[in-house]
Length: 287
Image 1 (spheres, rainbow, N blue to C red):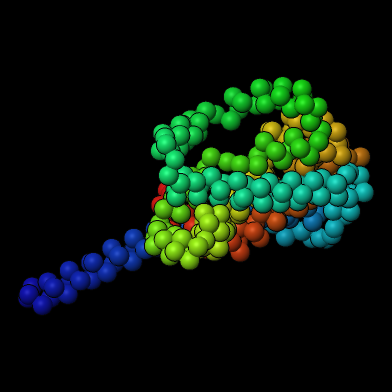
Image 2 (image 1 turned 90 degrees about the vertical axis):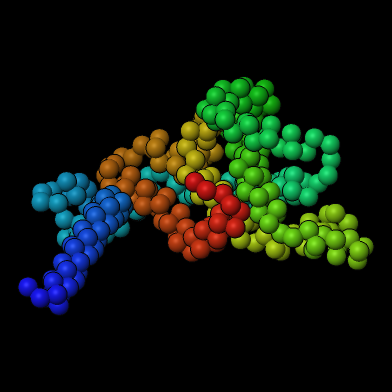
């Protein structure tokens, strides 16, 4: 075999191995995508089928006679309208409050010059090591003494700030050059004016990231809202769907409710994912 033939054979072998590796990677990605998206497609398909017809075999994702009967039953037999309002109101209010409190705290830890700033910050961060489930019982006792059970205050106030949000914004604020602060001080701006007119406009990616993560977290919250609410009228969507009792079409109605719960979070993340990735990247937060 000549040298040219050996080179050609070697190149052919490399091309074949590369092609096989590429095909295997695509097959693996397709399997992962199917395992991830499959349950959501089954959920949407089941919500559009008549009672229990999704339990037929062989399984088909496309219903033969799709309809919105399950959605009609959901709204006629449950208080889902109230649950949706509660979820939107609680998630939106908590998101706004967290943006205010976390940005102020992050600004103080990033730009402030008070004694023990770093020590206080790392003690503050150390509370992340405490599982949230540990604090549920003491928190419920406090809310019970305040007579806040079954109120919006119980759903909103304890979540009005977050350690992660403070850390995220503090890390982003540290990336903003202090020259902007010095220029604003020379122009006569106060510390609060620098925060409001200089820092916040430059921190839009981090604020959008925190807003998205907070809203999605509150929308999907379950354990804490379940504990602090006993009345159906005060439940949020996730808790209401988990505790609802319907007269007929139970499984199909539950799938319709799950679809309504999932759709807003999917759309929000779909439109905000660019800001989430950008904010986390610029803040240097991983994981």
